Length: 262
Image (cartoon, rainbow, N blue to C red; front, side, top):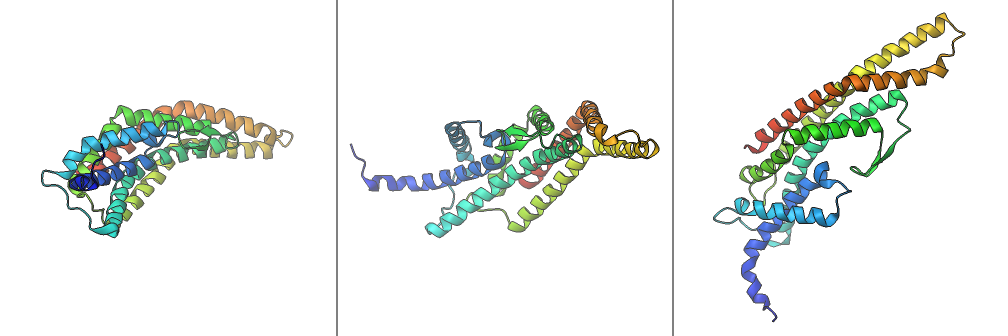
């Protein structure tokens, strides 16, 4: 039996808020590696986004409903605003992983493993083994600290701080994004600095040996020496990487609480 089109009109006040909630969830899924992993089937991601949207929808709309955007232009602006909020949360999360991986990439370059990259399905690009070790370590710390629950909590609280259909102030978003990028670079330096200092000392020692004993071919043993030093430094620094990641995630959670409360 066909349903008259006019009978669907009363559903518009429900469909539009749900769609806006869904767009905010999709914005979060865009950047967070836990949700945007290309190894996860697309239908699973869609079902998960719909399930989270259904759970969040009631609290986001509120008892009196949400003001609906007027016209296509208003709807497009509302959709962009919802995407921006979700993508900001996802970007802050992804920058932590990128900072850890950048520091590990610097170590792998000094080890001579930069050319020995393998396909990483998590990011759909090439990465070294050292980068993948650092990423999975940061991911385990993230899950152990309840980061997935913090993300959902921030998403729920964001509807209280940023009403449905509105976006964050662009100035605030730019300030938060620039601060997060600065923290990501500092995190990369903290991850890679110990090994880079040891590599620098090893290079200086090799230079002195090459000058004092020219009969030794430093170039032939330099690559193997850097590889051995890199493996030793990774073994020693794994605990330090975990502590640095833990500190970075703690700062990330505090930033979410300052932005959205909770």
